[in-house]
Length: 130
Image (tube, rainbow, N blue to C red; front, top):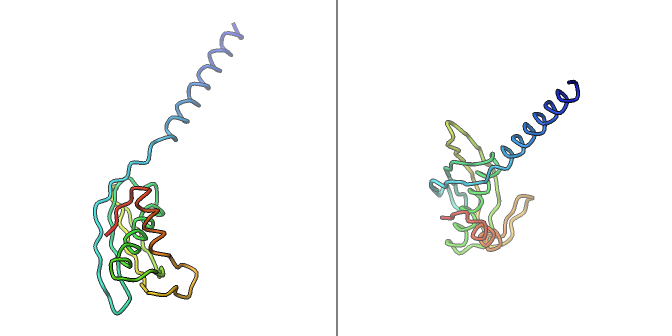
């Protein structure tokens, strides 16, 4: 009798483990809901992005970086430097408010991006741009 109870308990535990593994393997299916750009002053640009299905703030930051890279290219520049990104989530809608400087030459600083390289990566990953 004890052996049967142990086998039942083991089967239940294995089943719960399988359920937990299934829940963690949810596919990433983002819905990008738009980019708004605003030239603040000179080479300073603000990007407001919205999306659903983000796994976290880094997905929203990636979306804004893609917008900044494409914007720099459209304006004839090759680089951008990240200044700040604020991320908010409410009711499943993720919003990002990012500010970048754009420039023709590689700017000083640690958070610089090569607009051409980033734009290609965004296209490969299906992240929309400006």
